Each structure stands twice: as C-alpha cells, then as structure tokens.
Image (cartoon, rainbow, N blue to C red; front, side, top):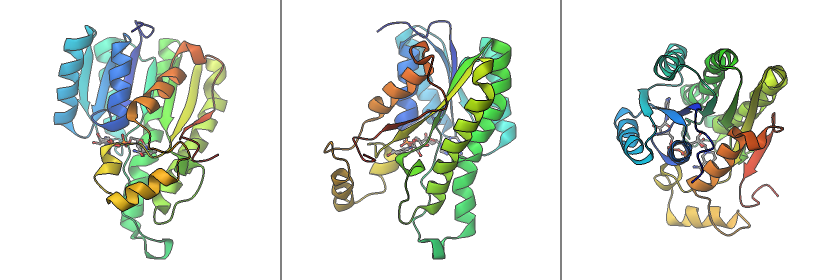
Length: 251
Ligand code: NAI
C-alpha cells in the first residue's frame, strides 16, 4: 500500500466501528497519524493498539461524545498536543434513532439524533477548521447519507440531520476553500455495518438490497475508499461536493 498520507495528521470520529473503523484502518495503513475518537472507549483503544502494531505509524485513542462541544474541542486540542498539527478530519459518528412517523415522534428522540448527527458535525468543523488554518490547510469529509438527499419513512430526525450535514458542508466549503481547506460530504447507501445489521430482520434486509440496483448492500471499505480519496491530494479540485456511494440507489 502506498504511503500517500505520510506526514499527515487525521481525526476520525465514530472510529470504533463500521465505516469509521474502515476509514481509520485505511488512513493509518497509508501513513497518516490518526486520532481515532469514539464514545466507545474500549473499542477505540483495541483498534488503536492494533493499528499501532500493524502499520508502524502512530495512532491515538480519544474518548469523545461528539454531541458535547467541550469534548470535541478537547479532541482537537489532544490531537495538536500529540502530533503538533491537524490536516485531515472525518466527522463520521452517527446514530439511527427510533423509528416513528412524523406525527408520533418523541421530541427527546428528535433532539438526540440531531445532537449527534448534526451538532456533532458542526462542533467537529467548528474546532477542526481553526486548527487546520494554523496547520497550513486541510481536508474535511462529513459523513452524510443517501438520506441527506431524499426522505425515508419513520426517520425524519435522521433525514433532517443528514440533509443539514450536506448543507453545512457546502457552506463551509464556500467559506474556507480559498483558505486551503476543502470540505466534502459522502452519502453512503445502506452499508453492512452494526448500525444496519443489529436493527433489521432478514425480510427487511432483503427489501433494502432490492432498493440498490447493484444488487447488494455496500461495505465499509467501499465508503472508506471514496472518503479517503476526498481527503487526499488526488481530490485537490473537489470541494463542496456530495459524493453518493450507493450502488445506484439515488439514480
Ligand atoms: P456504526 O454504528 O457501526 O458506527 C458508529 C460509531 O459512532 C460507533 O462506534 C459509535 O460508538 C460512535 N458514536 C455514536 N454516537 C457517538 C457520539 N455521540 N460520540 C462519539 N461517537 C459516537 O455506524 P456506521 O454504519 O459505521 O455509521 C457511520 C456513519 O455513516 C454515521 O454517520 C451513519 O449515519 C452514516 N451512514 C451509515 C449508513 C449505513 O448503512 N451503515 C448509511 C449512510 C450513512
């Protein structure tokens, strides 16, 4: 594997599982120093131990609740303290929330989803951008969803959070692209991760597969490949974009 991220420092939120784990593994394997941040401290420590042994580059674990701005600010401060700079960030931590139609949503459930999926991405960019400006520029990817482009029955809060993530991604790109920071969003279709697999019957799973013209769900590695392409210098003219990775779900 090439070492095209050598000398770069990255933060990945929600890195203990699924897509964030795949992104962290790939970045580390390609030479980046990675702070893997997650609510799940045990999971993130186990992954970082493994990465440090395998790739020969340094990785650090950080326990964070992305819905708390002081903790997100501390995550960025920790990264600067450990590695001296910040070049790359993937704001990926997210939750699905309880399923209910609009007229039956518990307002507390609504806020819980928005606090993690939207406010977590905002707090991420809020503290990563100043650190990147001091580091001479950077690249951010925010994890949206196909449900950042269309609606989905029973998931209004999730849909609202992901539409908003695409909007604030475009806004940050408008504001910071001329200052050397690119900001893009990735929109995965349904991906085989614990988020999907723990919450679904076989019948529902088959129904989902049927919505992807490619004939299967995606894998975390397939999302990581596009995410890390957008982080890389190969995507130097790509900013403010929304990249579906969805087996033609939206086509
Ligand atoms: P996952 O459940 O496998 O991983 C999510 C990670 O985020 C977990 O390690 C969890 O501990 C962490 N997390 C949750 N709340 C947190 C918080 N408040 N602070 C810090 N960490 C927190 O989920 P998956 O599937 O890898 O999802 C990652 C992202 O991709 C999410 O933003 C999700 O909405 C998005 N996505 C996932 C799709 C899928 O089909 N799996 C489809 C489209 C988007």
